[in-house]
Image (cartoon, rainbow, N blue to C red):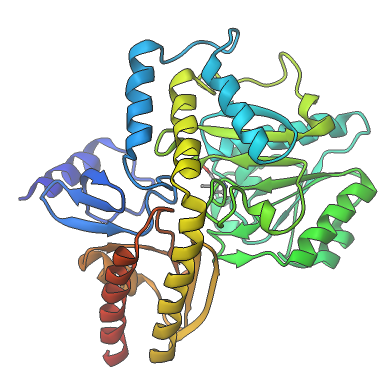
Length: 397
Ligand SMILES: *Cc1c(COP(=O)(O)O)cnc(C)c1O
Protein backbone atom coordinates (compact mmCIF):
# COMPACT_ATOMS: atom_id res chain seq x y z
CA UNK A 1 0.00 0.00 0.00
CA UNK A 2 1.48 3.39 -0.96
CA UNK A 3 1.07 6.57 1.07
CA UNK A 4 -1.85 7.76 -1.05
CA UNK A 5 -3.83 4.57 -0.42
CA UNK A 6 -3.37 5.01 3.32
CA UNK A 7 -4.79 8.53 3.20
CA UNK A 8 -7.69 7.36 1.02
CA UNK A 9 -8.44 4.70 3.65
CA UNK A 10 -8.57 7.37 6.36
CA UNK A 11 -10.95 9.48 4.26
CA UNK A 12 -13.24 6.52 3.75
CA UNK A 13 -13.45 6.14 7.49
CA UNK A 14 -13.50 9.75 8.74
CA UNK A 15 -14.36 12.27 5.99
CA UNK A 16 -17.90 12.79 4.68
CA UNK A 17 -18.21 11.43 1.21
CA UNK A 18 -19.53 14.55 -0.53
CA UNK A 19 -17.06 14.74 -3.42
CA UNK A 20 -16.22 12.60 -6.41
CA UNK A 21 -12.52 12.30 -5.64
CA UNK A 22 -9.67 10.86 -7.66
CA UNK A 23 -7.08 8.93 -5.64
CA UNK A 24 -4.39 11.60 -5.65
CA UNK A 25 -2.95 13.08 -2.47
CA UNK A 26 -0.88 16.22 -2.88
CA UNK A 27 1.92 17.19 -0.57
CA UNK A 28 3.53 20.31 -1.99
CA UNK A 29 3.30 22.69 -4.89
CA UNK A 30 5.00 25.62 -6.56
CA UNK A 31 3.69 27.72 -9.44
CA UNK A 32 2.10 25.38 -11.97
CA UNK A 33 3.64 22.24 -10.47
CA UNK A 34 2.33 19.95 -7.75
CA UNK A 35 3.74 16.79 -6.22
CA UNK A 36 1.82 13.95 -4.59
CA UNK A 37 2.94 12.22 -1.40
CA UNK A 38 4.37 9.34 -3.41
CA UNK A 39 6.66 11.77 -5.20
CA UNK A 40 4.94 12.07 -8.59
CA UNK A 41 4.96 15.46 -10.33
CA UNK A 42 1.98 17.03 -12.11
CA UNK A 43 1.43 20.11 -14.22
CA UNK A 44 -1.56 21.92 -12.75
CA UNK A 45 -3.73 23.62 -15.38
CA UNK A 46 -6.73 23.79 -13.10
CA UNK A 47 -5.21 24.89 -9.78
CA UNK A 48 -7.85 24.35 -7.11
CA UNK A 49 -10.80 25.32 -9.30
CA UNK A 50 -8.97 28.58 -10.08
CA UNK A 51 -8.14 29.33 -6.44
CA UNK A 52 -4.38 29.39 -7.01
CA UNK A 53 -4.79 31.94 -9.78
CA UNK A 54 -1.23 33.23 -9.52
CA UNK A 55 0.15 29.73 -9.09
CA UNK A 56 0.62 27.61 -5.99
CA UNK A 57 2.49 29.03 -3.01
CA UNK A 58 3.38 32.33 -4.66
CA UNK A 59 6.32 33.79 -2.75
CA UNK A 60 4.68 37.18 -2.17
CA UNK A 61 1.60 35.49 -0.69
CA UNK A 62 3.59 33.05 1.43
CA UNK A 63 5.75 35.87 2.82
CA UNK A 64 2.75 38.11 3.50
CA UNK A 65 0.97 35.34 5.39
CA UNK A 66 4.06 34.49 7.44
CA UNK A 67 4.68 38.15 8.30
CA UNK A 68 1.05 38.78 9.27
CA UNK A 69 0.69 35.50 11.18
CA UNK A 70 3.48 36.55 13.53
CA UNK A 71 1.82 39.92 14.21
CA UNK A 72 -1.95 39.39 14.31
CA UNK A 73 -4.18 36.80 12.66
CA UNK A 74 -7.69 37.68 13.67
CA UNK A 75 -9.64 40.51 15.26
CA UNK A 76 -13.38 40.72 15.47
CA UNK A 77 -15.14 43.03 13.04
CA UNK A 78 -16.20 45.22 15.96
CA UNK A 79 -12.68 46.63 15.66
CA UNK A 80 -10.66 47.96 12.78
CA UNK A 81 -7.69 46.42 10.99
CA UNK A 82 -5.43 48.17 8.53
CA UNK A 83 -5.13 45.19 6.17
CA UNK A 84 -8.92 45.01 5.67
CA UNK A 85 -9.10 48.74 4.92
CA UNK A 86 -6.23 48.56 2.43
CA UNK A 87 -7.61 45.50 0.64
CA UNK A 88 -11.07 47.08 0.33
CA UNK A 89 -9.41 50.20 -1.12
CA UNK A 90 -7.45 48.07 -3.57
CA UNK A 91 -10.56 46.19 -4.78
CA UNK A 92 -12.54 49.43 -5.17
CA UNK A 93 -9.72 51.18 -7.04
CA UNK A 94 -9.57 48.28 -9.50
CA UNK A 95 -13.36 47.97 -9.96
CA UNK A 96 -15.73 50.88 -9.31
CA UNK A 97 -16.42 53.47 -6.59
CA UNK A 98 -18.15 51.60 -3.79
CA UNK A 99 -17.63 49.55 -0.63
CA UNK A 100 -16.70 45.97 0.25
CA UNK A 101 -18.07 43.34 2.64
CA UNK A 102 -15.67 40.48 3.37
CA UNK A 103 -16.59 36.85 3.96
CA UNK A 104 -14.92 33.48 3.49
CA UNK A 105 -16.33 31.70 0.45
CA UNK A 106 -17.99 32.33 -2.86
CA UNK A 107 -21.35 31.12 -1.61
CA UNK A 108 -21.19 33.54 1.31
CA UNK A 109 -20.25 36.44 -0.95
CA UNK A 110 -23.29 35.61 -3.08
CA UNK A 111 -25.46 35.34 0.04
CA UNK A 112 -24.35 38.85 0.95
CA UNK A 113 -25.23 40.06 -2.57
CA UNK A 114 -28.67 38.40 -2.39
CA UNK A 115 -29.31 39.82 1.09
CA UNK A 116 -28.23 43.26 -0.11
CA UNK A 117 -30.68 43.07 -3.02
CA UNK A 118 -33.48 41.88 -0.74
CA UNK A 119 -32.78 44.67 1.74
CA UNK A 120 -32.82 47.22 -1.06
CA UNK A 121 -36.06 45.80 -2.45
CA UNK A 122 -37.70 45.73 0.96
CA UNK A 123 -38.57 49.44 0.69
CA UNK A 124 -40.69 48.73 -2.39
CA UNK A 125 -41.87 45.21 -1.50
CA UNK A 126 -39.72 43.51 -4.14
CA UNK A 127 -37.65 40.39 -3.45
CA UNK A 128 -37.29 38.18 -6.53
CA UNK A 129 -33.88 37.50 -8.05
CA UNK A 130 -33.64 36.38 -11.67
CA UNK A 131 -30.70 34.05 -12.34
CA UNK A 132 -29.60 32.01 -15.36
CA UNK A 133 -30.00 28.37 -16.33
CA UNK A 134 -26.69 26.44 -16.10
CA UNK A 135 -25.38 28.97 -13.58
CA UNK A 136 -23.47 28.08 -10.45
CA UNK A 137 -23.59 30.27 -7.36
CA UNK A 138 -22.65 28.03 -4.42
CA UNK A 139 -23.94 25.36 -2.05
CA UNK A 140 -25.80 27.15 0.74
CA UNK A 141 -29.60 26.92 0.64
CA UNK A 142 -30.04 30.35 -0.95
CA UNK A 143 -27.24 29.85 -3.46
CA UNK A 144 -28.37 26.37 -4.58
CA UNK A 145 -31.74 27.97 -5.15
CA UNK A 146 -30.08 30.73 -7.16
CA UNK A 147 -28.11 28.12 -9.14
CA UNK A 148 -29.86 27.26 -12.40
CA UNK A 149 -29.16 23.51 -12.28
CA UNK A 150 -31.66 20.98 -10.92
CA UNK A 151 -29.00 18.54 -9.75
CA UNK A 152 -27.79 20.75 -6.88
CA UNK A 153 -31.31 21.21 -5.47
CA UNK A 154 -32.65 17.65 -5.40
CA UNK A 155 -33.38 16.43 -1.89
CA UNK A 156 -33.05 19.79 -0.18
CA UNK A 157 -36.61 21.02 -0.62
CA UNK A 158 -38.35 23.16 0.49
CA UNK A 159 -36.05 25.81 -0.96
CA UNK A 160 -36.25 29.51 -0.14
CA UNK A 161 -38.66 31.53 -2.25
CA UNK A 162 -37.92 34.32 -4.64
CA UNK A 163 -35.71 32.96 -7.43
CA UNK A 164 -36.49 32.50 -11.10
CA UNK A 165 -34.26 31.09 -13.87
CA UNK A 166 -34.07 32.08 -17.53
CA UNK A 167 -31.79 30.90 -20.36
CA UNK A 168 -28.35 32.52 -20.55
CA UNK A 169 -27.56 35.08 -23.23
CA UNK A 170 -31.28 35.63 -23.91
CA UNK A 171 -32.20 39.23 -23.17
CA UNK A 172 -35.83 38.84 -24.15
CA UNK A 173 -36.24 35.96 -21.69
CA UNK A 174 -35.02 38.24 -18.91
CA UNK A 175 -37.33 41.00 -20.06
CA UNK A 176 -40.29 38.62 -20.00
CA UNK A 177 -39.35 37.29 -16.57
CA UNK A 178 -39.21 40.68 -14.86
CA UNK A 179 -42.33 41.19 -12.75
CA UNK A 180 -43.65 43.39 -9.94
CA UNK A 181 -41.57 41.46 -7.40
CA UNK A 182 -38.28 41.48 -9.25
CA UNK A 183 -35.39 43.21 -7.50
CA UNK A 184 -32.21 41.82 -9.05
CA UNK A 185 -30.60 40.06 -11.99
CA UNK A 186 -27.68 37.86 -11.03
CA UNK A 187 -25.28 36.13 -13.38
CA UNK A 188 -21.73 35.08 -14.14
CA UNK A 189 -20.16 37.07 -17.02
CA UNK A 190 -18.79 33.69 -18.07
CA UNK A 191 -20.54 30.53 -16.90
CA UNK A 192 -17.60 28.37 -15.88
CA UNK A 193 -19.24 25.31 -14.28
CA UNK A 194 -21.92 25.68 -16.94
CA UNK A 195 -19.43 24.85 -19.71
CA UNK A 196 -17.47 28.08 -20.41
CA UNK A 197 -20.44 29.99 -21.81
CA UNK A 198 -19.34 33.55 -22.51
CA UNK A 199 -21.94 36.30 -22.32
CA UNK A 200 -22.48 38.46 -25.41
CA UNK A 201 -21.53 42.09 -25.01
CA UNK A 202 -24.92 43.26 -26.26
CA UNK A 203 -26.66 40.97 -23.77
CA UNK A 204 -24.71 42.39 -20.85
CA UNK A 205 -25.35 45.93 -22.07
CA UNK A 206 -29.05 45.08 -22.39
CA UNK A 207 -29.13 43.78 -18.81
CA UNK A 208 -27.54 47.01 -17.61
CA UNK A 209 -30.18 49.00 -19.47
CA UNK A 210 -33.03 46.90 -18.01
CA UNK A 211 -31.67 47.31 -14.49
CA UNK A 212 -31.37 51.08 -14.93
CA UNK A 213 -34.89 51.37 -16.36
CA UNK A 214 -36.56 49.22 -13.72
CA UNK A 215 -34.43 50.07 -10.68
CA UNK A 216 -33.04 46.52 -10.38
CA UNK A 217 -29.72 45.44 -8.88
CA UNK A 218 -27.30 43.99 -11.43
CA UNK A 219 -25.18 41.38 -9.66
CA UNK A 220 -22.12 39.82 -11.30
CA UNK A 221 -20.82 36.62 -9.73
CA UNK A 222 -17.10 36.94 -10.46
CA UNK A 223 -16.09 34.29 -7.94
CA UNK A 224 -14.29 32.33 -10.66
CA UNK A 225 -13.67 35.02 -13.31
CA UNK A 226 -12.24 37.71 -11.05
CA UNK A 227 -8.62 38.63 -10.31
CA UNK A 228 -7.16 38.69 -13.80
CA UNK A 229 -8.39 35.40 -15.17
CA UNK A 230 -10.07 37.05 -18.18
CA UNK A 231 -7.08 39.27 -18.97
CA UNK A 232 -8.61 42.20 -17.08
CA UNK A 233 -8.63 42.45 -13.29
CA UNK A 234 -12.38 41.70 -13.38
CA UNK A 235 -14.37 40.14 -16.21
CA UNK A 236 -16.95 42.96 -16.30
CA UNK A 237 -14.27 45.23 -17.77
CA UNK A 238 -14.34 43.20 -20.98
CA UNK A 239 -17.99 44.10 -21.52
CA UNK A 240 -17.94 47.87 -21.07
CA UNK A 241 -20.58 47.60 -18.36
CA UNK A 242 -20.33 48.16 -14.61
CA UNK A 243 -22.44 45.97 -12.30
CA UNK A 244 -24.06 47.28 -9.10
CA UNK A 245 -22.74 44.38 -7.06
CA UNK A 246 -19.82 42.05 -7.75
CA UNK A 247 -18.80 38.98 -5.79
CA UNK A 248 -15.26 37.62 -5.57
CA UNK A 249 -13.65 34.64 -3.87
CA UNK A 250 -11.57 31.83 -5.37
CA UNK A 251 -8.26 33.46 -6.34
CA UNK A 252 -8.64 36.62 -4.23
CA UNK A 253 -6.49 35.19 -1.43
CA UNK A 254 -3.95 33.25 -3.49
CA UNK A 255 -5.00 30.01 -1.79
CA UNK A 256 -6.40 31.40 1.47
CA UNK A 257 -10.19 31.41 2.04
CA UNK A 258 -11.43 34.95 1.51
CA UNK A 259 -14.40 36.37 -0.37
CA UNK A 260 -15.82 39.80 -1.06
CA UNK A 261 -19.11 41.39 -1.99
CA UNK A 262 -18.46 44.75 -3.65
CA UNK A 263 -21.33 47.23 -4.01
CA UNK A 264 -21.40 50.42 -6.04
CA UNK A 265 -22.74 53.89 -5.26
CA UNK A 266 -26.08 53.88 -3.43
CA UNK A 267 -25.89 50.10 -2.96
CA UNK A 268 -22.75 50.42 -0.86
CA UNK A 269 -24.71 51.58 2.19
CA UNK A 270 -27.73 49.26 1.99
CA UNK A 271 -26.37 46.80 4.56
CA UNK A 272 -26.23 48.63 7.88
CA UNK A 273 -24.95 47.70 11.38
CA UNK A 274 -26.60 44.52 12.59
CA UNK A 275 -27.94 43.42 9.19
CA UNK A 276 -25.04 41.23 8.05
CA UNK A 277 -21.84 39.84 9.55
CA UNK A 278 -19.11 37.22 9.36
CA UNK A 279 -16.91 36.25 12.30
CA UNK A 280 -13.91 35.33 10.19
CA UNK A 281 -14.61 37.75 7.35
CA UNK A 282 -11.73 39.99 6.32
CA UNK A 283 -9.27 39.07 9.07
CA UNK A 284 -5.81 40.68 8.93
CA UNK A 285 -4.34 37.32 7.87
CA UNK A 286 -6.53 36.76 4.81
CA UNK A 287 -6.46 40.42 3.81
CA UNK A 288 -2.66 40.44 3.91
CA UNK A 289 -2.80 37.51 1.47
CA UNK A 290 -5.26 39.39 -0.75
CA UNK A 291 -3.02 42.45 -0.83
CA UNK A 292 -0.09 40.27 -1.84
CA UNK A 293 -2.12 38.80 -4.72
CA UNK A 294 -2.87 42.30 -6.05
CA UNK A 295 0.77 43.26 -5.65
CA UNK A 296 1.89 40.18 -7.59
CA UNK A 297 -0.59 40.82 -10.43
CA UNK A 298 0.51 44.48 -10.68
CA UNK A 299 4.27 44.18 -10.18
CA UNK A 300 4.74 41.03 -12.23
CA UNK A 301 2.48 42.30 -15.02
CA UNK A 302 0.39 39.15 -14.84
CA UNK A 303 -2.54 40.55 -16.82
CA UNK A 304 -0.22 41.03 -19.79
CA UNK A 305 1.20 37.56 -19.33
CA UNK A 306 -2.28 36.06 -19.05
CA UNK A 307 -3.32 37.67 -22.34
CA UNK A 308 -0.15 36.67 -24.16
CA UNK A 309 -0.21 33.09 -22.87
CA UNK A 310 -3.93 32.79 -23.62
CA UNK A 311 -3.29 33.68 -27.27
CA UNK A 312 -0.45 31.15 -27.39
CA UNK A 313 -2.56 28.41 -25.79
CA UNK A 314 -5.53 29.16 -28.03
CA UNK A 315 -3.36 28.81 -31.16
CA UNK A 316 -2.07 25.45 -29.97
CA UNK A 317 -5.58 24.23 -29.16
CA UNK A 318 -6.81 25.36 -32.59
CA UNK A 319 -4.08 23.16 -34.07
CA UNK A 320 -5.44 20.20 -32.08
CA UNK A 321 -8.92 20.98 -33.37
CA UNK A 322 -7.57 20.76 -36.93
CA UNK A 323 -6.21 17.32 -36.12
CA UNK A 324 -9.10 15.76 -34.23
CA UNK A 325 -12.58 15.93 -35.69
CA UNK A 326 -14.22 15.20 -32.34
CA UNK A 327 -13.14 18.62 -31.03
CA UNK A 328 -15.89 21.19 -31.38
CA UNK A 329 -15.83 24.84 -30.42
CA UNK A 330 -12.93 26.28 -28.48
CA UNK A 331 -14.19 29.06 -26.23
CA UNK A 332 -12.03 31.34 -24.15
CA UNK A 333 -11.69 34.73 -22.61
CA UNK A 334 -7.98 34.94 -21.79
CA UNK A 335 -7.25 32.06 -19.41
CA UNK A 336 -10.83 30.88 -18.98
CA UNK A 337 -10.65 28.16 -21.59
CA UNK A 338 -13.20 25.56 -22.67
CA UNK A 339 -12.67 22.88 -25.29
CA UNK A 340 -15.92 21.36 -26.46
CA UNK A 341 -15.85 17.66 -27.33
CA UNK A 342 -18.22 15.51 -29.36
CA UNK A 343 -17.21 12.64 -27.07
CA UNK A 344 -17.38 12.27 -23.29
CA UNK A 345 -14.54 14.13 -21.57
CA UNK A 346 -14.23 11.99 -18.46
CA UNK A 347 -11.85 9.52 -20.04
CA UNK A 348 -9.67 12.29 -21.47
CA UNK A 349 -9.52 14.03 -18.12
CA UNK A 350 -8.43 10.79 -16.43
CA UNK A 351 -5.85 9.95 -19.08
CA UNK A 352 -4.37 13.45 -18.79
CA UNK A 353 -4.15 13.03 -15.05
CA UNK A 354 -2.31 9.73 -15.44
CA UNK A 355 0.08 11.45 -17.83
CA UNK A 356 0.76 14.20 -15.30
CA UNK A 357 -1.58 16.97 -16.43
CA UNK A 358 -4.40 18.26 -14.23
CA UNK A 359 -7.35 19.82 -16.05
CA UNK A 360 -11.11 19.62 -15.51
CA UNK A 361 -14.11 18.35 -17.38
CA UNK A 362 -17.47 20.06 -16.86
CA UNK A 363 -20.95 19.36 -18.25
CA UNK A 364 -19.63 15.95 -19.45
CA UNK A 365 -18.12 17.25 -22.69
CA UNK A 366 -16.27 20.48 -21.94
CA UNK A 367 -12.60 20.32 -21.03
CA UNK A 368 -11.95 23.28 -18.73
CA UNK A 369 -8.40 24.58 -18.74
CA UNK A 370 -7.41 27.41 -16.39
CA UNK A 371 -3.66 27.65 -15.91
CA UNK A 372 -2.32 30.25 -13.48
CA UNK A 373 -1.81 33.80 -14.78
CA UNK A 374 1.96 33.37 -14.61
CA UNK A 375 2.03 30.20 -16.71
CA UNK A 376 4.94 29.98 -19.18
CA UNK A 377 5.17 28.99 -22.85
CA UNK A 378 7.20 25.98 -21.87
CA UNK A 379 4.50 24.77 -19.52
CA UNK A 380 1.83 25.30 -22.18
CA UNK A 381 3.95 23.33 -24.68
CA UNK A 382 4.21 20.47 -22.21
CA UNK A 383 0.50 20.51 -21.33
CA UNK A 384 -0.61 20.56 -24.96
CA UNK A 385 1.83 17.76 -25.80
CA UNK A 386 0.29 15.60 -23.07
CA UNK A 387 -3.23 16.47 -24.24
CA UNK A 388 -2.29 15.69 -27.86
CA UNK A 389 -0.94 12.33 -26.84
CA UNK A 390 -4.10 11.51 -24.91
CA UNK A 391 -6.35 12.66 -27.76
CA UNK A 392 -4.40 10.62 -30.31
CA UNK A 393 -5.28 7.47 -28.39
CA UNK A 394 -8.95 8.45 -28.20
CA UNK A 395 -8.95 8.81 -31.98
CA UNK A 396 -7.71 5.26 -32.48
CA UNK A 397 -10.02 3.80 -29.84
C1 LIG B 1 -16.91 28.31 -6.90
C2 LIG B 1 -18.02 29.24 -7.22
C3 LIG B 1 -18.96 29.63 -6.24
C4 LIG B 1 -18.98 29.04 -4.85
O1 LIG B 1 -17.83 29.36 -4.12
P1 LIG B 1 -17.53 28.55 -2.76
O2 LIG B 1 -16.28 29.21 -2.26
O3 LIG B 1 -17.35 27.12 -3.10
O4 LIG B 1 -18.67 28.78 -1.86
C5 LIG B 1 -19.91 30.56 -6.60
N1 LIG B 1 -19.96 31.07 -7.84
C6 LIG B 1 -19.07 30.72 -8.79
C7 LIG B 1 -19.16 31.35 -10.15
C8 LIG B 1 -18.08 29.79 -8.52
O5 LIG B 1 -17.22 29.42 -9.47
